[in-house]
Length: 470
Image (tube, rainbow, N blue to C red; front, side, top):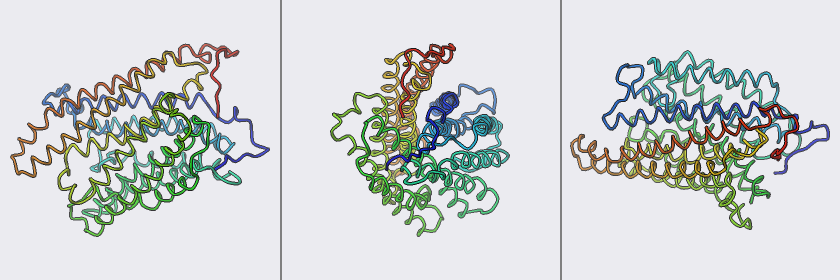
C-alpha cells in the first residue's frame, strides 16, 4: 500500500489548487445549512405547524425533497470533490487533467444543485425516491459526472507501479456513480414500469449510498487516518477484502427497501442475504481502522479530526448492526414505514459520512488558509453539539419507530400512532435545531478564520503558517 513515486513527478505544492478545495468546502457547508433548514421546516409540519403556509411552492413536502437532495448532491458531493482535489494529485503525483476543467465543473455543479432545488420547489420532481431531480436537470448532471470521471480518472490511470487503496476506491466510485445515476434517473423514467421500475428504484436508492458515498468515504479514511496516526493501516489484506466485498455484495441489496412488495420474492431474499453478507465485509473495514489504533495511546481521543473519524466509525458499526437486523423479513414487518428507518438514515448520512467530511474539513482548513482556526474551542463545541444532536435524533427516531410499529401491529386506529409519535417528533425538532446551530457555528468559525488568513490579506510572507503535510 505504499504511495507510488516517480523521479519526473512535479513538486507537490504545484499539484493542488488549494483555493478551489476551500471553495468546495464553502459550497458544501452552504448546502448543509440549506438542507438542515429544509429538514426543520418539514419536521415542524409533523407537529401541526407549517411556518410557511402562504404558498404551495414553500410547502413542507417540497422542502423535504430539497432537504435530501441538498445533502446528497450539495453537501456530500461538494465535500468529496474538494477532498479529491487534495488527495488524488498527492497520491498520483500528477495534477488533475485540466485545472480549467476543474473550475468549470465547480461552477457547473453549483448550477445543477441550485437548479434542482428550484425545480423541486416548482413541483417538477420525478416520482422516484432520491431521484426527484427534474428531468431537464438529469442530462446536465450526467454530463457533469462524466467530466468529473475524466478529470480525476486521468491522473489515477497514469499511476505506475502499485496503487494505494484510496485510489482503487476513487476510481471505482467515479465509474459506479456515473452508471448508478444513469440507472436511477433514466431507466425508471423512460424504459421500465411497474414492479420492474420499483426494483430498479430500490437498487438506485442503495447504490447511491453504497457505490458513491461509501467508496468516497472509505477512500478518504484510508488516506487521512494513516497520516494523522503517523503509521500505515493495520492490514493491507483487510483493505482489499473491504474493496472487493463492497464491489461484489453492495449492488445486490437495494431491493431490501421494498420487502413485502410485489417484487419477486427471490429478489427480496437475495437482497436480504447480500445485506447480511455485506455487514461482515464492513466489519473487516472497522477492524482494520480500530486495529490501526494499537499502540497510539488512544490518539483518537485527543486529536480532534481523528475524533470525528472514529466517531463516524462507531456510528458505522451501529448502523451496519442495525441494518443486518432491519432487513430480515421478521424485523422488517415491525419497522416498515416507521421512523426507525428515518433514524437509521440520519445515523449513516450524518453520523458517518458527514462526520467524516467535517473531520476532514477540520484538518484541512488551517492548511488551506495557512493559519490556525479562529477558535479551536468552537471546533470542539461543533463536534460535541453535532455528535450529541445526532445521537439524540437517531435514538429518538429509532425508539419512536418501535412504538409506531407496535401500535400498527396491535391494529390500533391510525390516529393512535400519530398521538404516540408526537413526543418523539418534538424531540426530533430539538435535536435538528441543535445540529443546525452547530453547523452555523462551524460556518462562522470558518468565515472568521478566512478573515485572518494571510492569503486573504495578501501577506506573501505567510507568517504563522500551518505546514501543509501530505
